[in-house]
Image: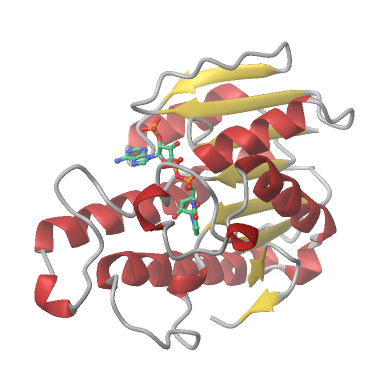
Length: 235
Ligand SMILES: NC(=O)c1ccc[n+]([C@@H]2O[C@H](COP(=O)([O-])OP(=O)(O)OC[C@H]3O[C@@H](n4cnc5c(N)ncnc54)[C@H](OP(=O)(O)O)[C@@H]3O)[C@@H](O)[C@H]2O)c1
């Protein structure tokens, strides 16, 4: 199996690629980073510097990596140096909203735009993006975090749309949205104080759970939203 992990420099993406390096079924892993230069290396692993929001860079990456069985996008943001997620809509900031939409949505759409040839002739290919349960519209009971929630809802809509378009054009591919559970990474660090210890997963645990979910996917299950435990989430 050949796997592409976009955002391999992140906590969850990095743990997924490390787990796949020791998986005998996997022969090559292509992984990308943006601002964080990776330190992990392995003979199966090739690193690529990439701006995942750049149309031309995604196109050229997919030209380089060749045939793929899985494409996993683990790029995402919840806060940046200037902004945290909004407690209420009074805190809404246009610039922060636009960055959320750009980082959390566009990489998946650009990958989908150019990945056709990489999946050609591959049985049971998987196109998965790490999303978040807070992007579920029907599950939203709390409000808050409007930019992140809206961007993950837009990501989920993008994945559903891609799945429908590919039903006829690329019926060998399962498109999946994945919720990882709260995981101890830079992204969640400022928000971990109220999370019970048993509900805060290590990146390695999350990676193992998400790989288990991906392994159950078939093209017939395309266009769905999965939680880390394999249960289906409502859009
Ligand atoms: N951790 C959680 O509890 C949790 C819960 C639910 C959902 N998620 C989702 O899981 C995914 C992975 O998150 P994580 O926890 O692993 O976070 P993380 O450790 O902060 O990793 C974030 C990844 O996204 C990339 N990235 C962030 N901002 C970027 C930008 N402006 N341009 C390009 N790349 C950018 C980072 O690349 P560089 O560092 O190389 O720039 C890194 O690879 C995200 O989509 C997140 O929303 C996480």
